[in-house]
Length: 265
Ligand code: 9D3
Image 1 (tube, rainbow, N blue to C red):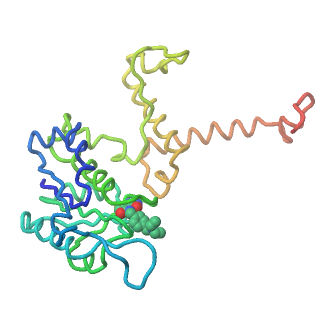
Image 2: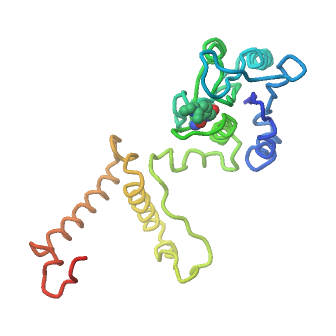
Image 3: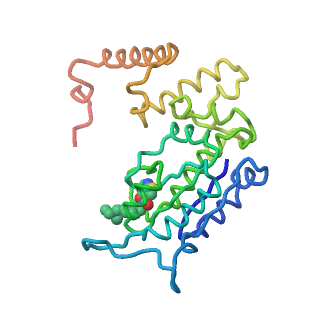
C-alpha cells in the first residue's frame, strides 16, 4: 500500500516512520509511505498556507491553492489513491473503517490545521472525511498516524504473526482478559492459579469469562445490540443465577437495618 500524508508539519511524522511496526513495514516494502510538505506548493516568498475567514471570525483557514497543488501532485503520482481528509466533521474511524481501508492500493491523507480547510477543497478533491473521535485536537497529523497504524497492521505480512491481527480483541467485539507474565508474585500480588495449572481448557474458559466480565463492567456498549454466541449467553445466565442467589439470601430489610449494623453516615 502506498501512503502519502499531506501536511504543513511533515517533521511530526519522523519518529513514526522510524519506529516499530511501521519502520519494519517500510523496510520490507509492505508499505511505501512519506509525508509531503503542503508549503512546497504555496506561492510567494513566504509560502503562506493560511488566510482569514470570509465573513470574519477568529482563527485561520487553510488556503485552497497550496492544498489543491499538493493533492493533485499526489494524485498524479498515485492515480488510484483514495483521498481522505482528516477532520472533526468526518465519519468516525472504527475497526471496520480500518479494515475497509486496508484493501486500498493507495491512500492520500490530508491533514488540516487551524480552523479547517477551505470548503471547496473538501467538495472537489476529497473522497472521504474521517474523524478519530469526539475530542478537540490541533490538526490532522496525529489522526493520520492513528489511521496508518490501524490500517498497516492489517496488511498481510506486516505483523510478525500473520493472523494475530484477526484474533485481536476488537475482532471478537470484546475487551481482552488481563495478561500476566513472570514473576509469579509481584509486590504481593499473585498470578491467577488457573493460568499456572497447565489445564488448557480451564485456562480458555477463565479467559473467556474474564474478557466478558471486563467488557460488561467497562464497555457494556460493546455487548448491547450484538448477537451473543451460546457460550457467552451461558456465562451471562450463570452470573444472573449467582446474583439472584445473593439477592434472595438478603433479609427483607437489608443487613444495614439488622442489630449490630454500623450506623449510616
Ligand atoms: C477549537 C476549534 N474548533 C471550533 C469549535 C473547531 C476545530 C477545528 C480544527 C477543532 C479541531 C480542529 C483540528 N482537528 C483536526 O484537524 C482533526 C480532528 C480532531 O480535532 N478530533 C478528532 N479527529 C480529528 S481528525 C482531524
